[in-house]
Length: 289
Ligand SMILES: NC(=O)c1ccc[n+]([C@@H]2O[C@H](COP(=O)([O-])OP(=O)(O)OC[C@H]3O[C@@H](n4cnc5c(N)ncnc54)[C@H](OP(=O)(O)O)[C@@H]3O)[C@@H](O)[C@H]2O)c1
Image 1: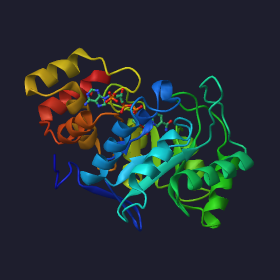
Image 2 (image 1 turned 90 degrees about the vertical axis):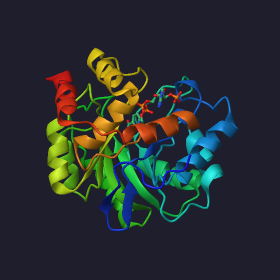
Image 3 (image 1 turned 135 degrees about the vertical axis):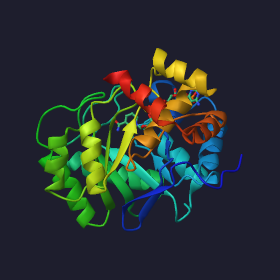
Image 4 (image 1 turned 180 degrees about the vertical axis):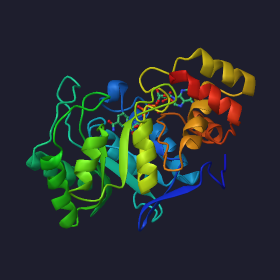
């Protein structure tokens, strides 16, 4: 499959940081439970190479995935990286021996994580680092000042080019912005889970990217009779409708659907380009009204 124009075009997060709005989330490339190596390493490498072949210039990853596995796969598949490719990683947690995700937000832990990401990805500076806060999929109250200041210091040191923040409330985004510029916010959001509608609009007004995780429902696929009925009527899959809806939701919305399959990658790229009429958008908007 050759795609010359990706759906959604591009978005400029900051000077020197323009990405395709159709991106790719690498979490699914690790083994079951995002733990350990993939069953088929060659297939994982093939997905990553096809991502770049399709013209996608935004890959989302983390050293949490595996741990280290997806970053090592990205390096093996794509290093030396094309100038146009931007790899966005995240810090703020570790993996324990049971596959748990304990927090690791102390300044020293964050510095170690940044150095680990640089090593595993084979880079001198990371394009974007998201500070991962909150719980499994929702924000938790509290100040972001100490960990975000630690990352801002590493940005001053030249280890990080741009900063983002993940699983946070609007108040926490504002607090982070008072410390250093934020180029993207990565939170749980999809057509059936829309707690962040106001935050998305406010970030759009500021030209800041919003990057929803679990755009297809994450570990449990989106379940909605309305979504299924719309997809049926349009002769499309629910996944295609969910991605197309996100692209049309707001111009600052960047997609990072995750997949371990080249076929699904192709389906997601073409599906996101589905044109949804005003009536269909209204019907989908009613999912959470
Ligand atoms: N900031 C954070 O805390 C955070 C949290 C979670 C995720 N993320 C990021 O967000 C990205 C996206 O989230 P996600 O990967 O967890 O969830 P997702 O994109 O909502 O869904 C991925 C799941 O959907 C399946 N899938 C993908 N395309 C499909 C298709 N066309 N047909 C059928 N099934 C399909 C995948 O299975 P197959 O592999 O079989 O295609 C996988 O099981 C992640 O990769 C990661 O980079 C960030």
